[in-house]
Length: 151
Length: 151
DNA sequence: TCGGCAAGTGGGAAAAAGTGGGAGAGCGTG
DNA sequence: CACGCTCTCCCACTTTTTCCCACTTGCCGA
Image (cartoon, rainbow over all chains, first blue to last red):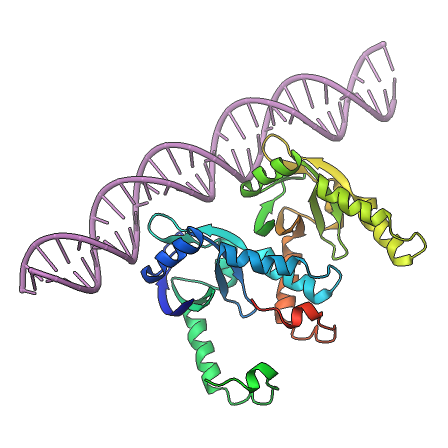
């Protein structure tokens, strides 16, 4: 399980260093083989290869003529790019994806269970503050799984 | 499995270079023999020959008196054209298909499992932004498989 | 507080891939 | 039958990418 917030920097070539504390886990899980793709919220998702492949298997099985399924496939599978850690634990983020998430020099890497989310620092702060301040969202109905959730 | 976004350029002769990372896979799978055809969304589809042949078999078996089936056959089988990678990993896209997808110089090649989609760059960006912004699509029913999908 | 070690950072060089042009062969036309 | 045009294949040059090495910075321990 990955968790925690990390401020990370991209260098001029678009390389991002995976925080040291995750490196060993990543090596064990996938030998440094990772997959980056996009999220609807304009951030990037970073999966160990085997975890991604499982998701991909589910996605490609969806019916070809369903509009929503097609959309998801195009977004997720369509943007999924394999990346590999170099000898210093860095990954090279492909320019199209960097652009998609508006990543500049300062980014934030969020552990989310089996994956990481990568946000541009500013967007992340803005979003987070938004969620905290957000009193609405109350109007939206809570799915059953949430209703009974106890923290 | 093919995945990922790639910005590609067409040269003056209408040749498109297959991104390097896919070449070996394509060679293994079909010896560079590919099939291009059209998609309803005005993009092109690029299949390794054996994968296409399987789809074609399914298509021609569809009932001849069904209007939709006829339509699909005419579109897909009717436009399918064999192309072959040259010594530098490029394929020559036939002018009618190039025109169909409004391909200019800059195109985008999207990995989609067993095939690629080829979009004109502008159309792709417009489409993608549309999908992302689109909170509706709510009108279309969500397939059961999607309801419970966890990424 | 100073020294040593480990990790972060940046730059450079070699190799591979992209790009474009040119020549030859085949086909169509006059 | 001959000439010309177009399509295809191949070669060379330029650009990009990838890999590796060295320097700096920060942290921990003595």
